[in-house]
Image 1 (cartoon, rainbow, N blue to C red):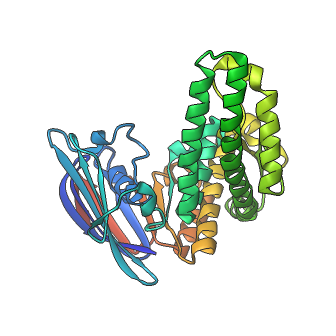
Image 2: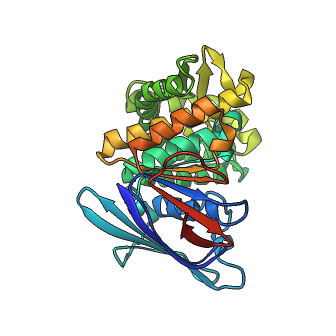
Amino acid sequence: MKVKSLKLNNYRNYSGVQVDFSDGLNIIKGSNAQGKTNLIEAIYMCSIGKSLRASKERQTIKWNEERAKIELEVEKKFGKSTIEIILSKSEKKTVRINKIPIKKIGELMGELNAVFFSPDELKLIKESPEDRRRFMDISISQMSKAYFYLLSKYEKILANRNKLLKQGLEREKLIDTLSIWNEQLARAGSKIILSRIHFLEKLAPYAELSHKYLTSDAETLALEYTGLKGETEEEIKQKFLQALDKSLEKDLKLCFTSVGPHRDDIKVSVNGIDVRAFGSQGQQRTCALSLKLAELEIIEQHTGEKPILLLDDVLSELDSSRKKRLLNFCKKTQTFLTCTEFEGSADRVFLIKNATIEKA
């Protein structure tokens, strides 16, 4: 899988630009606030259908403009396709694949598989479980449209259950109605949990290898899914139903559902120590990067296509040894790397200045 070209119109600070990329290492170089991150954000948006940096997508439209457009050409084993995203301040977002509008964002999943990493991804290790759940969900969704739709279904069921908990109904009526939502929640939730467990089982060996590679065999990384677990969907479903019954009084007091895949987490350990609680920032950064590099391997294993790798201002955060090893790893797949300075060999180097792009 390769990104061949990208066109931006009124996206972030770009008025209009077109760029053709190399199949190997693409260096996107320039001073701060010139548009380097905006470029790879646009690429990633064509992968997952939304911006990771903007809470409201209209924020990605250039100042004083009404509409923005991203157009990307991707080449896969069986031919090329074009992804277009049209953003408007007054209308809903439009996504087109080969000029045909899609009805649901889930239809975009798998068209462009990409792994994104920036210094902000440190939160994957050190901050809330929500960030680690999002990591799993985005990665699995790129490999499975069914999982993406399952998440959406679960969230709707969960919202209905939480709404019921807030209504203050008589206990007997509440319990009767809750049992219906509990059954639906446990059925969908058990599928999500089992998918995540299987994902982590496949990811963990690659993450361990990536971590050993980056740390010159000095550290051993381990991953563990924490929360409801089991060997089969039915086993997990029954545990989920039991947990919902047990947490009823707590849920009524809190007015939300306190157990389920929306509360689960990943425990990340280095040499047997919980790196979130006791790891240095350098260890946390290397762990996060190891998970992302392992994600590349898992997606390729599942789809038969190498995902693209997007690295935003990562080199400045690494020591010389890890920097060298990371750049060597980048030879495995098409990579887009932003930086202020770059020393070394690359297939193509672009210089960004005031949202204009030229080959360096």
